[in-house]
Amino acid sequence: MQIDIITVLPELLESPFSHSILKRAKQRELLDIHVYNLRDYTPYKHGQVDDYQFGGGAGMVMMPEPLAIAIEKLQEKIKYDEIIFLTPDGETFNQPIANQLSMKQNLLLICGHYKGIDERIREHFITREISIGDYVLSGGELAAAVLVDAVGRLIPGVLNDETSALSDSFQDNLLAPPVYTRPADFRGWKVPDILLGGNPTLIDEWRHEQSVKRTQERRPDMKAE
Ligand code: 6GU
Image (cartoon, rainbow, N blue to C red; front, top):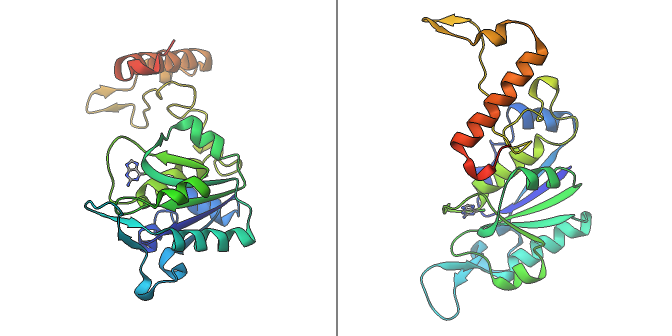
C-alpha cells in the first residue's frame, strides 16, 4: 500500500512511522509512506498557503490553489483509491473503517490547519472525510498518524501470529480480555488459575467471558452478546 500525505508540518510526521510495526511494514515493502510539504506547491510568494476567510471571522483558511496543484501533481503518478481529508467534522474513525482502508492500494491524506480548507477542495477533490474523535486538534497531522498506524498494521503480512490483529479490542466488537505474563505470583497478586491450567478450550471460554464482561461494563454502547 502507498500512503501519501500532504501537510504544512512535515516535521510532525517524520517519527511516527519509523518504529516498531510500521517500520517493519516499510522494511518489508508492504507500506510506503511519502510526506509532501504543501508549501512546495504554492504559486504564492513566501510559501503562502492560507488567507483570511471571505465574509470575515477569526482564523485563516487554507487556499484552494496550493492544495489543487499538489493533489493534481501527485495524481499524475498515482491513481488514489481515496483522497481523505482529516477534519473534526468528518465521520468518526473506527476499526471497521481501518479494516476497509487497509484493503486499498493507494491513499492520499490531506492534513488541515487553521480554520480548515477552502470548501471547493472538499467538494471537488476529497472522497472521504475522517475525524479521530470528538475533540479538536491543532491540525490533521496527529490524526493522520493515528489513521496510518491503525490501517498500516492491518495490511496483510504486516502482523505475524504474535502481533495478530484478530485478538485486538474492537475487531469482533468486543474489548480485549485481561492479559498476564510472568511471574505467576507477583507480590501475592496471582494470575487466574485457568490461564496456568493449559486447557485451550477452557482458556478460550474464560477469555471470551472476560471480553463480554469488560465490554458490558466499560462500553455498554457496543452491545456485547
Ligand atoms: Cl482529523 N483534525 C483535527 N484538527 N482535529 C481533530 C481531528 C482531525 N479529529 C479529531 N479532532
